[in-house]
Image (cartoon, rainbow, N blue to C red):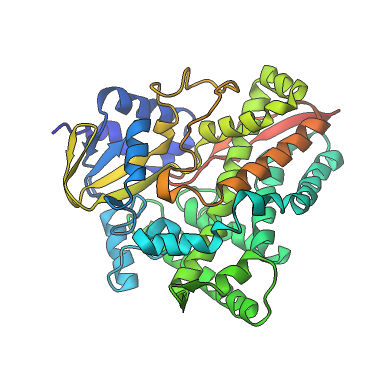
Length: 425
């Protein structure tokens, strides 16, 4: 069986690689071309099948009984980190048991808790409130001096406020939610990681996960109690009073539910929004096209999601012997789904390394695929569309005012700085 050379594939297991523009795309293209559906045996980690092709990612993502999320860690973790998590949890491989770390009927039952509140009709009802948040961000441009770090001032704060308001987290607590999100997803980034963290330690990721989970537990336990006593029209009330198979949701499941909403719920949208602005600031012809044809904004949003692919991977676990793309997969094998690779697959996307608005039905896997597809995808799309509609109304020109920088994270990442110079219409 063909194994990927360690020097070639090891950078994929290193968060720092994702902070180097173009490095991951170059690496994954080499894997797609020369090592499709091959195994990686990187020291300190279990063997993983590296799944780089769009068709294979979608195939695996549709077979939810054959490829589980929760039997082992659903994200890339060193063996030492997994062992530490098991010590924290009395044998469980997962500290968090959110929708990402659930399978089968349990996953379906928990997903159904917010299926209707996050459905397209329900999300559409949030538009008026969302537009108020958009106005807050646009006002920052009007008050500014023509230069701004788009990540720090707008791309991060806007989806954070929208999602936290929807959950029912008071505005004064939003900075704490952002900090915990950065600790969780950017655990190895020198600017965003938890103070005192050592990204060189194979156990550090697990230590950070435990700290973050405990902080979320402390915070959301109080919110659960409050919403059980005084229900409101928010997602916190829905989760706090949810029944799973006729019983109240388990406490750890509820905390995990809040945790994924309070992190991935805004973080991935922030990255796609930031990367979209970076692209516009470097491509004036694209800015002019969208300025003149705002009806192209929905296509722009979809291409921004494909282009950024904020969620870089999930790991699946084979529950039985099977075959994928002609490769014999054994029960217990682990499969790393490389979403950025699927979204640059030449077999699916013409000219995949160009940002294009004419892709028609954009078949990206930026929200995943199959039964675990992102539950908040409709909210994210509306957030981005409303913001960009407002931005193109007021912006006359935008360009980079310095060097953009990317986050060092192998799980969820995007730009951490996009300095722009702008003028208003």
